[in-house]
Image 1 (cartoon, rainbow, N blue to C red):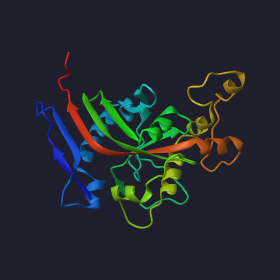
Image 2: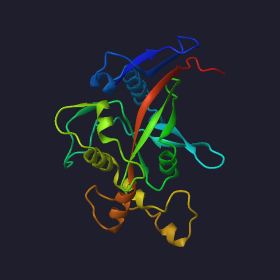
Image 3: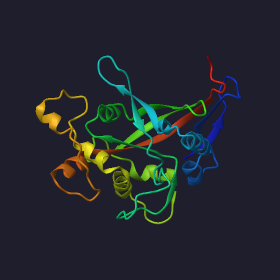
Image 4: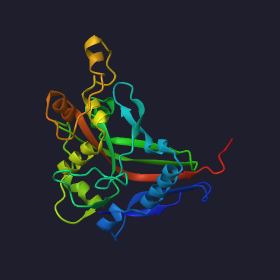
Length: 252
Protein backbone atom coordinates (compact mmCIF):
# COMPACT_ATOMS: atom_id res chain seq x y z
CA UNK A 1 0.00 0.00 0.00
CA UNK A 2 0.94 3.66 -0.18
CA UNK A 3 1.33 6.27 2.50
CA UNK A 4 1.26 10.04 2.34
CA UNK A 5 4.63 11.79 2.38
CA UNK A 6 5.24 15.53 2.42
CA UNK A 7 7.63 16.68 -0.29
CA UNK A 8 8.93 20.23 -0.61
CA UNK A 9 9.40 21.19 -4.25
CA UNK A 10 12.03 23.49 -5.65
CA UNK A 11 11.41 27.22 -5.29
CA UNK A 12 10.88 29.54 -2.36
CA UNK A 13 9.95 27.25 0.57
CA UNK A 14 7.90 30.03 2.15
CA UNK A 15 5.68 30.21 -0.93
CA UNK A 16 5.29 26.67 -2.22
CA UNK A 17 4.54 23.34 -0.61
CA UNK A 18 3.60 20.04 -2.18
CA UNK A 19 2.34 16.66 -1.09
CA UNK A 20 2.42 13.42 -3.03
CA UNK A 21 1.69 9.75 -2.52
CA UNK A 22 4.91 7.78 -2.09
CA UNK A 23 5.75 4.24 -1.10
CA UNK A 24 6.44 3.63 2.56
CA UNK A 25 6.29 1.04 5.28
CA UNK A 26 4.06 2.80 7.83
CA UNK A 27 0.62 2.90 6.27
CA UNK A 28 -2.95 3.22 7.55
CA UNK A 29 -6.40 3.95 6.21
CA UNK A 30 -6.46 6.91 8.58
CA UNK A 31 -3.53 8.49 6.71
CA UNK A 32 -5.10 7.95 3.29
CA UNK A 33 -8.47 9.25 4.47
CA UNK A 34 -7.01 12.28 6.24
CA UNK A 35 -3.64 13.13 4.65
CA UNK A 36 -1.52 16.12 5.76
CA UNK A 37 -2.74 18.38 2.94
CA UNK A 38 -6.44 18.01 3.70
CA UNK A 39 -6.58 20.36 6.69
CA UNK A 40 -4.65 23.00 4.74
CA UNK A 41 -7.14 22.78 1.87
CA UNK A 42 -10.12 22.95 4.25
CA UNK A 43 -8.63 25.93 6.09
CA UNK A 44 -8.05 27.83 2.82
CA UNK A 45 -11.59 27.14 1.66
CA UNK A 46 -13.10 28.12 5.03
CA UNK A 47 -11.21 31.44 5.15
CA UNK A 48 -12.38 32.35 1.65
CA UNK A 49 -16.01 31.38 2.22
CA UNK A 50 -16.10 33.20 5.56
CA UNK A 51 -14.90 36.31 3.71
CA UNK A 52 -17.75 36.00 1.19
CA UNK A 53 -15.72 34.52 -1.67
CA UNK A 54 -18.29 31.98 -2.87
CA UNK A 55 -16.30 31.55 -6.09
CA UNK A 56 -13.82 29.53 -4.04
CA UNK A 57 -16.12 26.55 -4.54
CA UNK A 58 -15.38 26.67 -8.28
CA UNK A 59 -12.39 24.73 -9.61
CA UNK A 60 -10.91 24.33 -13.09
CA UNK A 61 -10.85 20.67 -14.10
CA UNK A 62 -8.58 19.77 -17.03
CA UNK A 63 -8.83 16.51 -18.94
CA UNK A 64 -7.38 15.18 -22.22
CA UNK A 65 -9.41 15.32 -25.40
CA UNK A 66 -8.21 12.21 -27.20
CA UNK A 67 -7.95 11.80 -30.97
CA UNK A 68 -5.39 12.18 -33.77
CA UNK A 69 -4.16 15.40 -32.13
CA UNK A 70 -4.78 15.11 -28.36
CA UNK A 71 -5.16 18.40 -26.51
CA UNK A 72 -6.06 19.67 -23.05
CA UNK A 73 -9.71 20.37 -22.31
CA UNK A 74 -10.61 22.55 -19.30
CA UNK A 75 -13.83 23.74 -17.69
CA UNK A 76 -15.14 25.09 -14.39
CA UNK A 77 -16.82 22.62 -12.04
CA UNK A 78 -18.11 22.94 -8.47
CA UNK A 79 -16.37 21.36 -5.50
CA UNK A 80 -19.01 19.20 -3.82
CA UNK A 81 -16.93 18.30 -0.78
CA UNK A 82 -15.15 15.08 0.11
CA UNK A 83 -16.71 11.65 -0.22
CA UNK A 84 -18.86 10.85 2.80
CA UNK A 85 -18.68 14.38 4.20
CA UNK A 86 -21.20 17.20 3.88
CA UNK A 87 -19.80 20.30 2.19
CA UNK A 88 -22.06 22.69 4.07
CA UNK A 89 -23.09 23.05 7.70
CA UNK A 90 -26.71 22.21 6.82
CA UNK A 91 -26.74 18.76 5.19
CA UNK A 92 -29.94 17.50 3.48
CA UNK A 93 -32.27 15.93 5.98
CA UNK A 94 -34.50 12.88 5.83
CA UNK A 95 -32.32 11.01 3.33
CA UNK A 96 -33.05 7.34 2.87
CA UNK A 97 -30.34 4.66 3.06
CA UNK A 98 -27.62 7.04 4.20
CA UNK A 99 -24.10 5.80 4.85
CA UNK A 100 -22.60 6.16 8.34
CA UNK A 101 -20.45 9.29 8.91
CA UNK A 102 -17.10 9.15 7.15
CA UNK A 103 -13.80 10.96 6.69
CA UNK A 104 -12.20 10.88 3.24
CA UNK A 105 -9.64 12.53 0.96
CA UNK A 106 -11.60 11.73 -2.22
CA UNK A 107 -13.00 14.87 -3.89
CA UNK A 108 -16.56 14.89 -5.23
CA UNK A 109 -17.85 16.58 -8.40
CA UNK A 110 -21.23 16.05 -10.05
CA UNK A 111 -21.69 16.07 -13.80
CA UNK A 112 -23.90 15.08 -16.73
CA UNK A 113 -23.12 11.69 -18.26
CA UNK A 114 -23.43 13.35 -21.69
CA UNK A 115 -20.81 16.01 -20.88
CA UNK A 116 -17.55 15.84 -22.85
CA UNK A 117 -15.46 15.46 -19.70
CA UNK A 118 -17.04 12.10 -18.93
CA UNK A 119 -16.12 10.72 -22.32
CA UNK A 120 -12.64 12.24 -22.11
CA UNK A 121 -11.98 10.72 -18.68
CA UNK A 122 -13.21 7.31 -19.76
CA UNK A 123 -11.02 7.40 -22.88
CA UNK A 124 -7.85 8.52 -21.06
CA UNK A 125 -7.81 6.26 -17.98
CA UNK A 126 -9.19 9.09 -15.85
CA UNK A 127 -6.13 11.35 -15.85
CA UNK A 128 -6.92 14.91 -14.74
CA UNK A 129 -5.47 18.06 -13.22
CA UNK A 130 -7.27 20.68 -11.14
CA UNK A 131 -6.31 24.33 -10.68
CA UNK A 132 -8.19 25.95 -7.79
CA UNK A 133 -7.77 29.69 -7.22
CA UNK A 134 -8.78 31.33 -3.93
CA UNK A 135 -8.96 35.13 -4.36
CA UNK A 136 -9.55 35.97 -0.72
CA UNK A 137 -6.22 34.51 0.43
CA UNK A 138 -4.29 34.72 -2.87
CA UNK A 139 -3.62 30.99 -2.87
CA UNK A 140 -3.64 28.48 -5.69
CA UNK A 141 -4.18 24.77 -5.13
CA UNK A 142 -3.25 22.36 -7.90
CA UNK A 143 -3.71 18.63 -7.77
CA UNK A 144 -3.71 15.72 -10.17
CA UNK A 145 -4.48 12.03 -10.12
CA UNK A 146 -7.15 9.69 -11.44
CA UNK A 147 -10.86 10.45 -11.77
CA UNK A 148 -13.42 7.68 -11.44
CA UNK A 149 -16.88 8.05 -12.98
CA UNK A 150 -19.80 6.54 -11.07
CA UNK A 151 -22.78 6.47 -13.42
CA UNK A 152 -25.34 4.22 -14.99
CA UNK A 153 -23.93 2.19 -17.89
CA UNK A 154 -20.42 3.54 -17.47
CA UNK A 155 -17.72 2.49 -19.91
CA UNK A 156 -15.27 1.53 -17.16
CA UNK A 157 -15.84 -0.46 -13.97
CA UNK A 158 -15.91 1.68 -10.84
CA UNK A 159 -13.23 0.49 -8.34
CA UNK A 160 -15.54 0.41 -5.32
CA UNK A 161 -13.41 -1.66 -2.98
CA UNK A 162 -10.05 -0.09 -3.84
CA UNK A 163 -11.33 3.43 -3.24
CA UNK A 164 -12.70 2.49 0.17
CA UNK A 165 -9.16 2.56 1.53
CA UNK A 166 -9.43 6.37 1.27
CA UNK A 167 -12.54 6.35 3.49
CA UNK A 168 -12.53 6.04 7.28
CA UNK A 169 -15.89 5.00 8.66
CA UNK A 170 -17.67 2.50 10.86
CA UNK A 171 -20.44 0.23 9.71
CA UNK A 172 -21.57 -0.70 6.23
CA UNK A 173 -20.63 1.90 3.59
CA UNK A 174 -21.99 1.72 0.01
CA UNK A 175 -21.30 3.81 -3.08
CA UNK A 176 -24.90 3.79 -4.29
CA UNK A 177 -25.86 5.53 -1.03
CA UNK A 178 -23.17 8.15 -1.57
CA UNK A 179 -24.43 8.65 -5.12
CA UNK A 180 -27.94 9.22 -3.78
CA UNK A 181 -26.67 11.58 -1.05
CA UNK A 182 -24.97 13.72 -3.70
CA UNK A 183 -28.12 13.74 -5.86
CA UNK A 184 -30.30 14.71 -2.90
CA UNK A 185 -27.90 17.47 -1.80
CA UNK A 186 -28.51 19.42 -5.03
CA UNK A 187 -31.14 22.14 -5.25
CA UNK A 188 -34.41 21.14 -7.02
CA UNK A 189 -33.70 23.29 -10.11
CA UNK A 190 -30.17 21.90 -10.41
CA UNK A 191 -31.50 18.35 -10.26
CA UNK A 192 -33.92 19.30 -13.02
CA UNK A 193 -31.09 20.65 -15.19
CA UNK A 194 -29.79 17.14 -15.77
CA UNK A 195 -32.64 16.63 -18.27
CA UNK A 196 -31.64 19.73 -20.25
CA UNK A 197 -30.43 19.38 -23.86
CA UNK A 198 -27.11 17.49 -24.10
CA UNK A 199 -24.19 19.85 -23.39
CA UNK A 200 -22.47 21.27 -26.45
CA UNK A 201 -25.22 20.42 -28.95
CA UNK A 202 -26.92 22.99 -31.24
CA UNK A 203 -30.28 24.23 -30.03
CA UNK A 204 -33.55 23.97 -31.94
CA UNK A 205 -37.08 24.80 -30.83
CA UNK A 206 -37.61 21.37 -29.28
CA UNK A 207 -34.36 21.48 -27.34
CA UNK A 208 -35.00 25.10 -26.39
CA UNK A 209 -38.18 24.07 -24.61
CA UNK A 210 -36.12 21.76 -22.41
CA UNK A 211 -34.24 24.77 -21.07
CA UNK A 212 -37.31 25.76 -19.08
CA UNK A 213 -36.59 25.38 -15.36
CA UNK A 214 -37.92 22.14 -13.91
CA UNK A 215 -37.64 21.51 -10.18
CA UNK A 216 -37.25 17.90 -9.11
CA UNK A 217 -37.44 16.41 -5.65
CA UNK A 218 -34.94 13.70 -4.75
CA UNK A 219 -37.66 11.05 -4.78
CA UNK A 220 -39.52 12.21 -7.93
CA UNK A 221 -40.00 9.42 -10.46
CA UNK A 222 -41.76 10.98 -13.46
CA UNK A 223 -40.37 10.91 -17.02
CA UNK A 224 -38.25 14.02 -16.53
CA UNK A 225 -36.91 12.78 -13.19
CA UNK A 226 -36.01 9.41 -14.69
CA UNK A 227 -34.11 11.10 -17.52
CA UNK A 228 -32.28 13.39 -15.07
CA UNK A 229 -31.33 10.48 -12.82
CA UNK A 230 -30.10 8.43 -15.77
CA UNK A 231 -27.66 11.20 -16.68
CA UNK A 232 -26.62 12.31 -13.22
CA UNK A 233 -23.02 11.19 -12.63
CA UNK A 234 -20.59 11.36 -9.74
CA UNK A 235 -16.90 12.08 -10.33
CA UNK A 236 -14.61 10.81 -7.59
CA UNK A 237 -11.17 12.43 -7.78
CA UNK A 238 -8.35 10.31 -6.35
CA UNK A 239 -5.48 12.71 -5.64
CA UNK A 240 -1.92 11.59 -6.37
CA UNK A 241 -0.14 14.92 -5.94
CA UNK A 242 -1.19 18.28 -4.50
CA UNK A 243 0.57 21.64 -4.44
CA UNK A 244 -0.34 24.86 -2.62
CA UNK A 245 1.10 28.12 -3.93
CA UNK A 246 0.91 31.21 -1.71
CA UNK A 247 0.89 34.50 -3.61
CA UNK A 248 0.73 37.09 -0.85
CA UNK A 249 1.52 39.80 -1.66
CA UNK A 250 -0.01 39.28 -5.07
CA UNK A 251 2.56 39.74 -7.88
CA UNK A 252 1.88 42.76 -10.12
